[in-house]
Amino acid sequence: MDSQQSRVLVQLRDMILKGEFGPGERLAEIPLSERLGASRTPVRLALASLEHEGLIEPSPSGGYQMRAFTSREIADAIRVRGVIEGFAARLLAEDGASRQLLRQLHDCLDEGDRAVNKPTMELDDYAAYVEMNDRFHRLILEGCGNAAVLRTLEMLASQPFAAPSAMLPMQSSMEEGQQWMRQAHRTHHALVQAIERGQGSRAQALGEEHVEIARMNLDYALERPDLAAQLMPGMRLVAGSRGRG
Image 1 (spheres, rainbow, N blue to C red):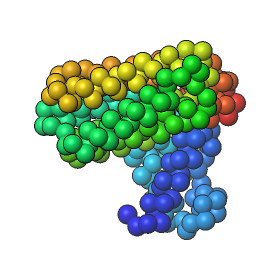
Image 2 (image 1 turned 90 degrees about the vertical axis):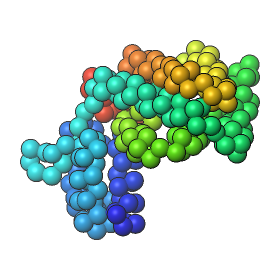
Image 3 (image 1 turned 180 degrees about the vertical axis):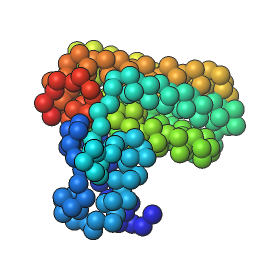
Image 4 (image 1 turned 45 degrees about the horizontal axis):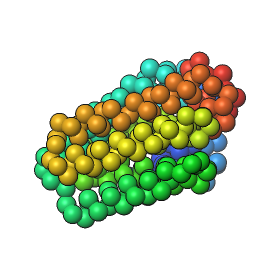
């Protein structure tokens, strides 16, 4: 894949996940080419890749259109992510993590502690936690050394709200948000402890349990579609959401 096609693919996927297209909206090559400042060929190839990923579907009138996603599809993707991330943590625990990786994971734990262990979290604290959370999950996935795990997670992360931090914006709006975030970060601590102690089964169980908060966030978003559409415009893609993106 050449650099222009890669750029167009990344841009289009990002626009989709940010809710810039509504379900059923037609994705035509020429307008997209003009909008992205790219020729039609990389746009055409990017659209074909996005259909393969399951983000868009063929349009009855030709070309492609945005598809809608069900809450079940999103919940299933989140659950599968937990299984895969748990397996990655298990591999790390059983094979042994390097000192450098453990230092990096502990740095993440320290950053997360500074963000969540306050009387009240500000928006900057939530932003810092999201950045730390993405890095923490990436370190475990890359550190396990299994290329198939990485490819699978990349595919899952391309689905709406399946990535590790995708549902976190909802927590900044809820009364229990900081409490949930602290609970999630306690699981981060337990995961690192299991990896250090070589406890593969425990690490896998923790990885699978960890995504339950993301599923709770999804339920919260579905119960408050207008708020969810403000915080996460991509909720427009979820069938049944009433939010106005």
